[in-house]
Length: 121
Image (cartoon, one colour):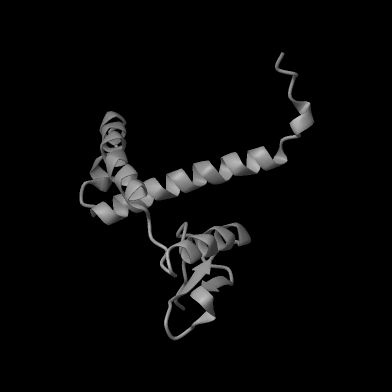
């Protein structure tokens, strides 16, 4: 059984989808894991004429994160299992960490009671 992945975060797609202007024969069908990814992906697709790719800034940020990741792996003596991995596999690891971090921050922000903060003055 082939598993479909979310067009934005790479997690398993769960039935949410987007086809630009509902023109099935002309544009790809993008699948998403959640309504949050679907809404963000469809907005991105509308802005970029149906294409959902990483921006140049995101691609550069992932590449720039490779060296700090490698430094930590060497420091922790964990480089051996990653030595023969491709750049694409390392990038997936970095993206998964970033996605997990962002998802946690969003969940925490949604769970927080805005009236629970002390008055800032």
